[in-house]
Image 1: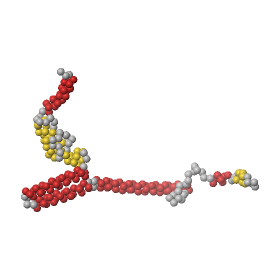
Image 2: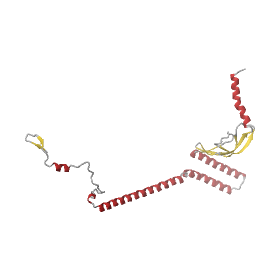
Image 3: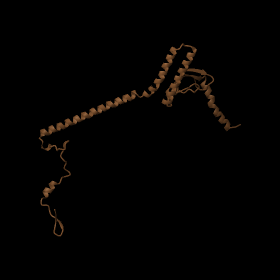
Image 4: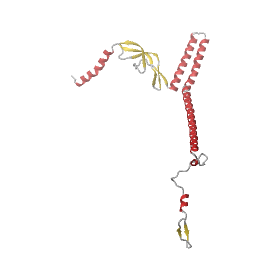
Length: 229
């Protein structure tokens, strides 16, 4: 306790009740008693063993109820995610199909016009031109908007990655397999082969005899250049 004198001097006087001061100061190492949701202290220290057991059972029941609620929430979340995923798969090609619907309408109108015509040569010409225009429109839209491109193979060297040979023919005029005819066109999607072309292939009649001179010619030329006569 701090005391002052007449001249303003200060000195400390011993506390006459040190035990009470020690009891009033809180001990930082002593845990505070548990409180419920309303901030009230749960008087568990004064409970009988039976009451403590009942209190523990109530807490366990409450934890089980919380666990069941969390499990139900997670199950609902899982079902919702699966439903949204399935909807995304089901409607992934919606934009493409909407682009194809007008072209299907064009085919339907062309068929109706052919049925209503008199089947003359002029009518057939008009019908053929209409079908050709629809085919060009479809191919152009698939290529420009979706990246699906049709490629021609006639006259190209045979490539097993791009071509599927369904017929072969021997020819003495070639030295390597060449595509002679496209039966079914091939397609690429953004530069990836999605369907190989079905083709007829020209094969050399004597591939072994043709290749040996081609391999020997560079060596003979190199030898003559190194040892000129």
